Image: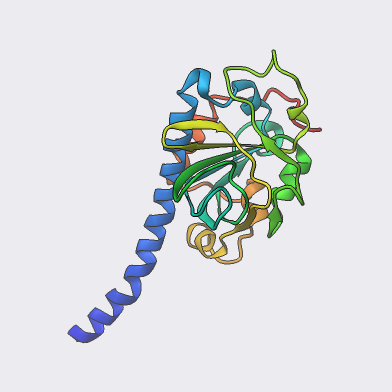
Length: 227
């Protein structure tokens, strides 16, 4: 009897840990976004977030090597639901490869993506997409507002940022590949629920997504993101 109980606990424990780890990643993503947006003059411009179709946060993306090296991480992506009245449940995504700017040495960096239009949103909803190939991307501008700046960068489908060792800046994500983490999403939303269904708002968000949504709800849709 004791042996059977030990076997049962051993089989359940990894599942419970995986679910906890996934929910912890949502909380970490909310914390990263909150800290970045509270930086004021060294933050993502508020008017960009108001125009955004989707936002992705990859906390603690691991990198190695000099400038170009191995990279791997997990994070979350959420998109505005139809009508722009709120945000979808977050989908867990995996990120691999790519040139994360001019980062030197091994370590970790927080990455934020702002998807600016419907075309970028549709690319994001694929089972796999590569930044720069499936969607145009550029390093995003930093500051309180983009109004006084050239709109050249605003033609990009995805604007990207990184924070490493306290330094926040726009970066290039060209070559980075994004895939939905079907296993983690199944734990949160049930087997058979797709990445696209999650981002289209077809499933309710878990409680662990509340903090992330609270941050993003401070930036209601202003239009202009449907290029």
